[in-house]
Image 1 (tube, rainbow, N blue to C red):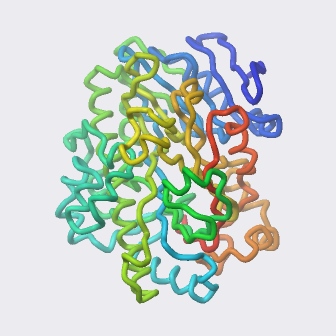
Image 2 (cartoon, rainbow, N blue to C red; image 1 turned 120 degrees about the horizontal axis):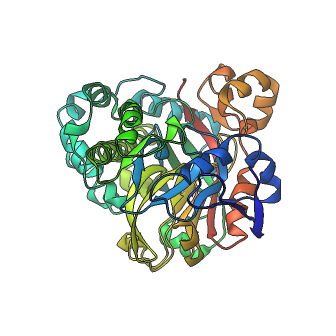
Length: 473
């Protein structure tokens, strides 16, 4: 696929073949080789063939090949268009939450960090297939969770109402209907609330390394030298099963509506069809589940800090800075049109003054949270008015350069340990996490700067990892 440079760090994927619209890829010259190194451009071209797609389909600087739409892809669709499970992703509402403390990171030496990690792991199960420790409660309120999201678990004692004000969509996407979810998905979901999972999911203890905008950082409650905690997880087996069910189900549905599928990964149905409405309702259940999952984990992390430090929670802090979704399809207003925006491995970033911001961040724009790899920096950004060209979307992370299997084959123990330096991690066997090594990812600084340099985002703060908790696949 050929790209045409149309501006600084901007490249157009021209219409060709059956594409209805063109694509737009954000990349620095250094990132271009990664963009051309897999099938992500072909996947963008496939998305551009779907009915109702709006100009342009987008590739973020962290773009890489995925299932259906590439990870780091954004696709907006008109009301007459289609909805695609593969354009949302397997881990529905995989997302990131940032917690801020009132504590100095310098007061946490390695033994204390290790003690905190151990206590957090005792309360938050990690790894693929693990079951939650609050099943007596979460099984009872499961139906409330899928309809009310984070609010349901706050009502059950996991956190406080102030947390909800700092979650995208206030922690609940309207339109959920549990009747559209399979029994298998419900079984998996009822057991896994309050769990981290494996893969790229993590809990990270961080130090605010640099503040770029002191005024906005202060509004976000961030300061240099501060200890922060970042949570990255999603809807677990619940969302994965929903995506699997509907990706399969929409393959035979598409021809009934005269839709020619460019790939099985982009199986879809008209938004207003029975199949399309069913998927949206099921997806909203998983979105709300993921918000609730991160809320429960937040409550467990707070408990771990209180137990280890022997301080009151009021003195520790651990307030929510923000919680953003990465894999989601939402109705939004863009250019005076109502569009269904699919973001897969992409984050919404609204500018100051945008009416869709939560009230607490109306004047600043809400925080956009961009984690790096387990050994590199994470960023707090805000969007600008210029981000309207990307449907107010930005990258969600660094983006992989090596597949998991390639990372396991090629990265040695010595290379992994050198890349981690003094950062603590929760396994003695490096092979449990080597597929998440910094060498498997793009340079987070290059990825973040790609959009900063063209004015779509502004840096607010940078955090560096001190200790990382991950689950085994």
